[in-house]
Length: 428
Image (cartoon, rainbow, N blue to C red; front, side, top):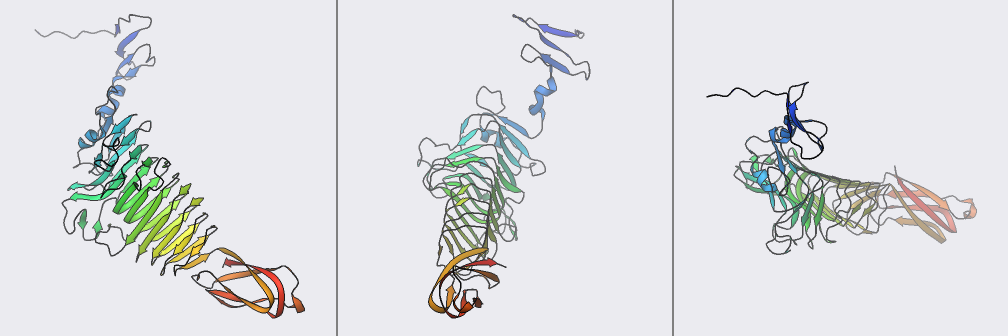
C-alpha cells in the first residue's frame, strides 16, 4: 500500500554537540538546502551538485578528495571526443597533489586547469633514463585532431634525458591520426590542422630536469602560445625544440632554457597556416638561441633583459628590441635588426646587421682621412653619422663623411690631423 508523503518544514539532525544540523527548504526559491556548525550560511543541493551536474566538467583529485576521478588520464578518457571542440570544450579540474602518470591528450577542446598548482610528473620519474617518456603528450588519435588545448596553473616535471621522441615535459606531435594525403594530421592538402585553435600553456612551471631534456617539443603546429610560468627548476642544458610551428609566442616566462627554433617551407609536413612567426617577449632570462628560417617566417625578441648567444641562419629576418643578448652570429642570407639593444661580439656569418646605434673611435696620427670598415655589412646605407672630436682640428678643417656604404664610410678632413675622434651611427 502506497504511503503518503511525510511533510515537515525542516528536519534537524540530532547534533550530539552544540549547534544545529538542518535539512530544510529555501523560502525564496524553494530549493533544498543544508546547514550545520561549519556551513553556517545554508548551501543548496544544486550548489553541492555543482560541477557534477555541469556538462563537460570533470574533477580529478587524490584519494579522499571526493572527486569523480583519481587520475588525470581517466578523466581525459571519459571525455567524448566526438563532441568536444573549441566551442564545446571539456574542462578538467585537477586538485592539489602529485600525479605520477604520463598524460595523453588526443581529443579536441580538452583543457586541464590546476587548482593549487598540482604537479604532473612522468610515470617513471623516480628512475630517470628508465623507460623514458613525455609527461604530457598532445597528439591526434584515430580521426580526432586536438586543434585547441589549454594547460593552466600546472607544474609539469620530466627528469628523463632525450631518448628518441621522449624526454619532454610537453610534447606536441602528429601522433597516429588516420587522415588522408600525408602521414599524421593532414585533413586537407593545405597541411596539418593541429593547433589551429591554439595550444596554450598559461602559468605553467615546466621543469625538464634531465640533461638536454625539453620543456616543450613541438612540430608542425599552427599556434603555440606560452604565457607566464617559472622554468628555473630545469637542467642547465634543457630547452625547447620547435620545428615548423606557424605561430609561436612566449611571454613573461622566467628562466627559459636554450631554444632551437626551425622552420623550413620545404619540409615534408607543414601546418595549415602558411609561414612562421617566432616571438619572445618579456622573458626574464633565456639561454642560447639557435634559429633557422628558410623561405618563410620571422623571428623576434623584445624586452628580454638576459639572453645568451644568438645564432640566426636561413634567409629570413630577425628583430631584437629593448633586450640584452650575447654574441650574435647572423648567417649568410639573413638580416638582423637591433633596436635599443646591447650585445656581445658579432661573429662572422655573412649576414646583414642593422643596429639602431653603434659607436666607434678613430685615431688620426698625421692622416687627412681614415676609412671606417664596419665589422658587419648593414642592410643598407640609410644611416646618419655623428662625430665628436677631442681637439680642435688643424688648419680649421672640419671633417666630412664621404663614400657612405652599407659596409662603412670615410672621415675626411682634407688636411693632416693628429687627434682622436669618436663616431656614432644611428639608423635613419
